[in-house]
Image (cartoon, rainbow, N blue to C red; front, side):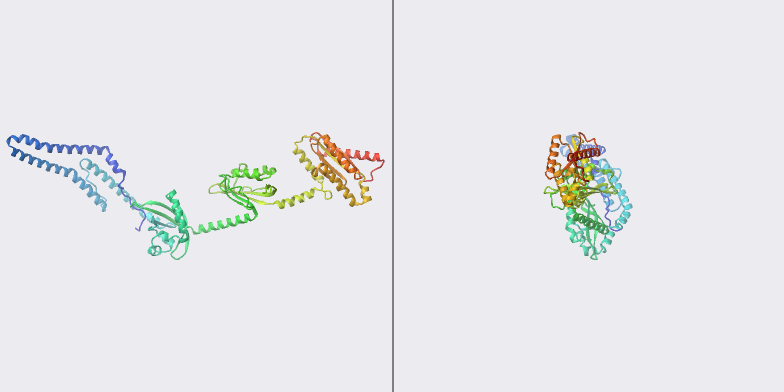
Length: 563
């Protein structure tokens, strides 16, 4: 069988089973019996010569001493034989059995019958030898399979010491390196650090040392140098272990990761290009982890201060940005579109709609700028984490052009006043903003004998007259509350205005018109609430205007010369 990284089982000198042997109750009993026998023998050997000397003393001192010496020698010899029989012989048998087992005689066992503690020790040694034998059998059963796996992995398997000296290299690793087993020493100096690409070695070792402080298992991605001069990316999964000799060593599984690395690099390149393309047109770009409510990254084109720092709470940053930068009229729609609490995260997947909103943000100068914000939700199917990319695009110029076109379509080209269509919309919105409360008045103005002005002085002069009337109306009622209905007819709206204040405005307008040598007829309608429809107010004001016009012509004893 080829060299294998798997070692056989062994008995550690610190195995707790030996401690259990000493603390076993049966061992304690055997120990006490051995002590009792030894004490009895010593007492007997001491007392026999003394008794003999006392008994034989009357026969003579020399004879008694001689007999005592003989008995003492016999006692000592008997005690020695007893010691050899009970202690040395069983110990020799146990040592011999262990040595024979170590040399390969797996069937050898210690004598089953031995006195006292040594007998118990022999039983335990036999138990350990049996366990080791069973472990060897199991190892022999699985070792071929382990060897096949080690040498036929998709990648390679190697073991190395803490100084990176190679202890084992599988056939798969040789195939990955494109070299033979004999070339390992000559080409790589039998050291892992020579396998790693020089440009990646410092980073790999630094990452290795960092990971070792956290956990014994780690993963590394780096390039290796092949024997033919080429290089390839590999993924290493390693663990720091202790071998059979108690020496630390790394067990590493290394697989070819070149294809996956190419795919990853392409993905990174595409993401980088995509980000650069977005940054070229975006004023702001942020990436957010909506699941954990964290800001992942931020890009601000304007060079302004960071509003969404990396690692900060997204919800808090969003509220602060809304309060400090978003126009007050747009904060409600902004919160509904972008604040995390208003997003339905449980319904966000790859088919979730993209959020789009046009709103105004404050510039450093204090002016407001039109921008378009977009939020694109993304779901990681592996982790089920919902992220989002949110970017802001400058649309101020486009919105101003659109607003100018819209405003032009809503205004009279000659006087600059809002036209009839805009009138109904703006008056309705004004009343809605006032909560349908207050005293509201609507005026309708018509120039008398305006056709005569055009006939006598020309249309250029007539246009000038129309602009003068429009300017006086704007002066009294404001530009957004003054409208040209068509021809020489105008409408002015006075929301929530007291009666005295209303009369002052009408009187000021009438005096200004009379000073210009032409006359205008006025009719108005007033309501205390907004319950009266605009069409009704307009009809009442128009009726009263024509009544005023008829009264004016009767006073002058003339008839209108046409409209």
